[in-house]
Length: 235
Image (cartoon, rainbow, N blue to C red; front, side):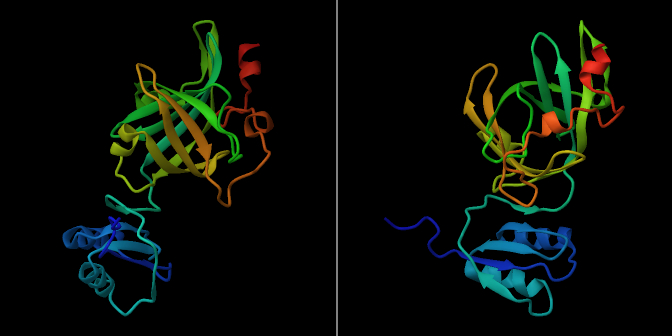
């Protein structure tokens, strides 16, 4: 059976100096090249050989590149730049859980994670998709409805993966990089069950920020906003 990538060339450029990522991305899209670029100069381009070579020429002085496998990207994205903010709020309601929220198209896409996030790639955390929230809710900390909320972690994040956001979420596989005070590095959300409240798995990717065997929610229970724990808030 013929490969769906037959006739496609993929080249990788290692980071070696800053580039105008917006200009490179615009040129890649004009040429029909897929992949990604970082402002540091690192680039992955795949497509028709002439188009990929034209993108390399657009970079200016000859840059060293190596042929790599075709990854099957469906977009040309800029990586290494913030896509918005994220927050994790520890929430005592009917059941205790952590709310992971990612800013996407002006709203906070939200998942309830009963056991909380983990930096251990072996820990696959159940994450139940819940209603979107407004960005203004991100700083809320206090008692509510007999329970309470603390801001357990917050920061910015980068979108990743081969498919553009928010389509990646709609398809059920979203890759992203967190830059928080407690959570850092790559993560993935993988939908395992559709329905009124879709179920997902939240998984830490194996990178330099992974901590096998760790339990970050037990090690760092305090709010990054006030320093209080949820137990102290509730008295």
